Length: 234
Image (cartoon, rainbow, N blue to C red; front, top):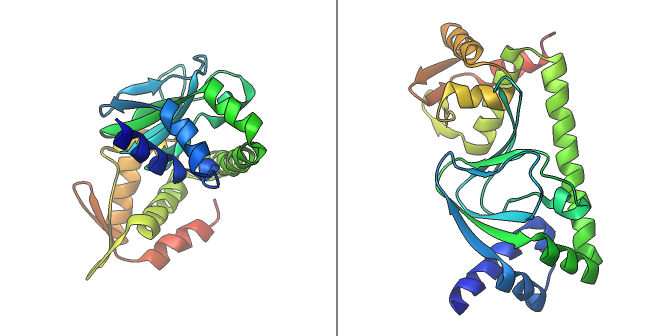
């Protein structure tokens, strides 16, 4: 059990808001953190539920998303190891503002609201870090609103493929290879559209020679042409 708690402290130390805590402070959280595991697609918490604490990703990935009354989803972010969610409602006492679900097999550390608030009272620098993290997320959300309001699906898809190429792309003889999300429905949720328009625009990119699709693998032949899509009038 002691070894597990040490691992918890190492995980917490990788989280941005906890990165400057010393060993006793990390141990305070680690001793109170609860390990929770979730299967792919399993809901971790839902929008509107009372906030009972925050979560830190130890392994796997989670998706943060909003749902419409008609069932459409808009993905706000994908968080991997070292990521954290629900700092804001823990901080301000509100409900969870979005839903979170496991993308794959996920191991999370759960920190109770009371323990986190006690840490903030004792160490104001943690609260300042929360504000910086929340500020960065607000900027990202403003960017999502701007894209949804002022750009086409083609533009958003090109932007998504470029981000994927820069973060996870693999150089091959024909260009840059990337792996798409598990389904076009999931991809549609990430760029704020419907599955049919994702399929249609991917097919158009392929027919125009910009890329080649092989299952969920896509080889982008011409990154500069995709970048030009972002500069074209909407």
